[in-house]
Amino acid sequence: MGTNLPHGNGSGKRLRAAIIGGSGYGAGEMIRRLLIHPDVELTRVASIDYVGEPLWKAHPNLTGLTDLVFEDIAPAEAARDCDVALLALPHKVTAAKVPELVELGVKIVDMSGDFRLNDVAAYKEYYQAVHPCPELLSQFVYGLPELNRDKIKASRYIASPGCFATTIELALLPMARAGLLSGPIHVTAITGSSGSGAAPKAGTHHPVRAVNLKTYKPMAHQHTPEIGELLTAAGAANVELRFVPVSAPLTRGIFASCFVETSAEVTADRLRSLYDETYAGHPFVRRPPDRLPEVAAVSGSNYAEVGFAVGEPTGDTRTVTCFSAIDNLIKGGAGQAIQNMNLILGLDETASLADPGSWP
Image 1: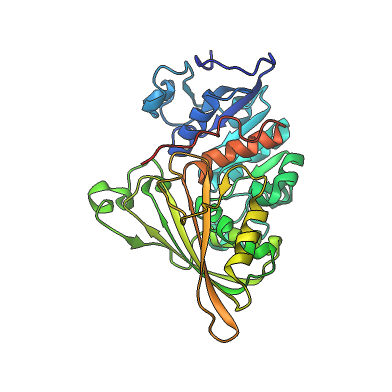
Image 2: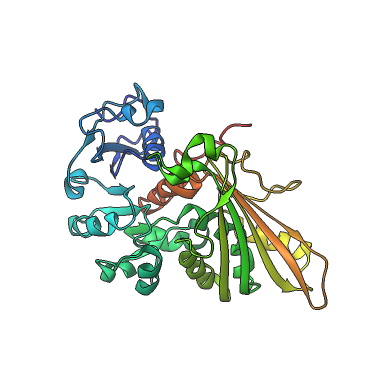
């Protein structure tokens, strides 16, 4: 039995999903969302950790909700008879596993960085490895629904964006689509500790993290090239992303501030129209009407908040600061993967994702 939870779609037909790489925080969030999904049944969870143990050994919030156990099985065996495989494996591990899933014929949603980039040279530079199957890169669609929804629906293979990338892309996408992005863009984005994964590390050790702010990988973070590719595809010209990530004393959440030099003719009214037009019909992105984005307003949910502040003109230019906040594990990871899964399976895009999270 995959789950003990009730399901209410009434159709009698359930699609089948497998998770490959099941012990991390992102996988735990995917499992949670699948256990309450009205149309998809989680059938197997593959992992090299906790083998033979119930899922709640790694994810205590799932105690009593499923009879599934972690299985040390090959990806093709995990995904046998499934409609979709959800991959929560590390970068560079995923690329070695995907070919057997492609041969199996199962649809794929991947949360690693291995299939996000079109440029194999950029992959080698930012992931310090030669891509083992570059011939498959063109078959993957970049899974940001707010730009690529139709392409996602028509695809079999989705590369879900990174957490920093999602946050920054959503902040800047309206300006890119309007042709208002070019040249240098300065970004500072602050992230919670869960983005570093479930394995304890010096950077996530609570006594240090809880009282600290520090940068890491400044100007060299691996999400940089995917942001550049996405913004260029959306309409930006000659973008130079100068990105400084910061570790914060949060468990969940990312907050990005993006500084853009644009024409003095760009007004707050025009930006309000651009943001509202860009995200009309996209259920998980909102621009709060009377405040700027906040992490606590989206933590625990698949929602993103976007906003901006407009500076005074200086000659022919002015600075616009674009803001965005997401939950790094949900809209920045597992939730967006489920959103992409819903789209490629022809399901309601919001299925198992519409809950608003908690406050505070």
